[in-house]
Amino acid sequence: MNHATLPTLSPEAARALADAPAWDRVTFEQKLRERGRSYHIHHPFNVMLNSGRATPEQIRGWVANRFYYQIAIPVKDAAVLSNCPDREIRRGWIQRILDHDGFEIGEVKDAGGIEAWIRLGTATGLSREEIVDLRHVVPAVKFAVDAYIHFARHAPWQEAVCSSLTELFAPEIHKQRLATWPEHYPWIDAEGLSYFRNRVSQARRDVEQGLAVTLDHFRTREQQERALTILQFKLDILWAMNDAMALRYGVNA
Image 1 (cartoon, rainbow, N blue to C red):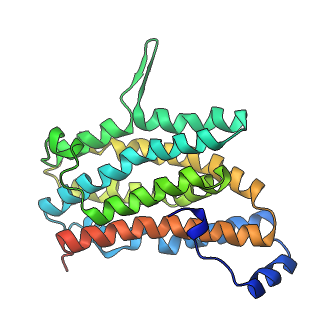
Image 2 (cartoon, rainbow, N blue to C red; image 1 turned 60 degrees about the vertical axis):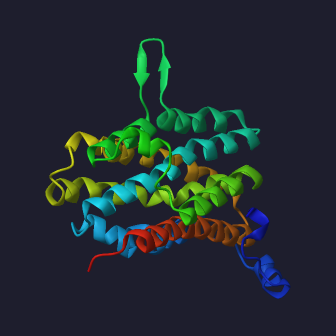
């Protein structure tokens, strides 16, 4: 799947949009944020996780499958960098790769978000080996994540940036997990939840950059509608991942 395979408008609809006035920045941002109703925080599998109804097997299955998405994030961000000719954008965007892959610069070291996710996995009872060798990743999750990487590599870099705007809704889902998991799943070592704590602040910073690029680039009404389609595509990726995990592990009433 690449950017050309996203839903396209009929010629009549395209002509109508070409004549439609663009939304102002405030309205456009509001339209983007309204897509949060499709965020996977509302998926029955995720609702089960955050409401304390998940079994250890379901939690471990979720962590193991989401790891495939976690290791794809810096690959997606590297694709953005490789396509972006704007030095200032690259200087800011590269922080995302460091956040996930980790870094060691002089005396400053950060193991990064991928390592934090592995610690989450071991805190739930998974071994490091079975997390990193991807043995538990179901095919539909892999297909969905690979489609996202393919999009980021082949779409214009501004569209790849726009697809990252599911980060608009991420702090809330991380805060939910931090608020509910210690009570519902006391058998998970609290130190394993450090990934969620770190991402609350990191996601807010990332949103500011991604939102600024999107609001600056998508200026016409047709472009703005395109941005909404791209964001919905990414939301559908995340929802489809939860569909696959729900099918594999079940959803408890």
